[in-house]
Image (cartoon, rainbow, N blue to C red; front, side, top):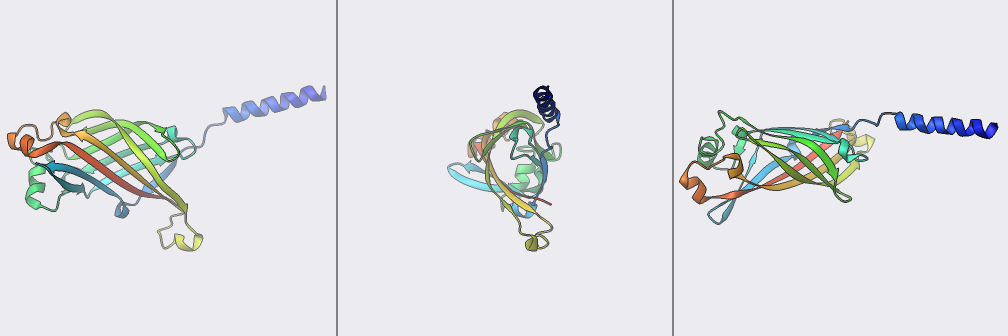
Length: 203
């Protein structure tokens, strides 16, 4: 009888553990001063680089359960910066981004999966110029570090720092960017390489 009761107790404990809700993924605060959203596209044969200076990223990251992670991003088109004002104004015009009508580029993950020890793949909806397409965003976890107590105040209360790198290539024509002007399609390459470095922290 004792063994039966003991067995029943263990079974009940196992069922209770199985029914317990999983811990929610942690919300990481993205450090905009140490985060870049960059791109590169060819002008004839020469790669020209640029970045967007104004963006918001909402990152929920669960290292123990990557599928519980989510990422959303909103990028202000008007913040495009290629170190050339004339070119930046052209990029915001109707020839390319049409920033007045479509002020933001957005990405919203629909799923996240692990890819090796340090890799993740975020599948989600990328919207540019009002066109939404599903993309896969490969992400590499560059590292996670706990911050010693004596350094936390200096770092704004951060208790842990994580860094991520993501990159993908898209065809700007898929989003209707630069397709209505013969010069834009002949002079500027169709493939755009996107490169994102993110530093985030937990408090």
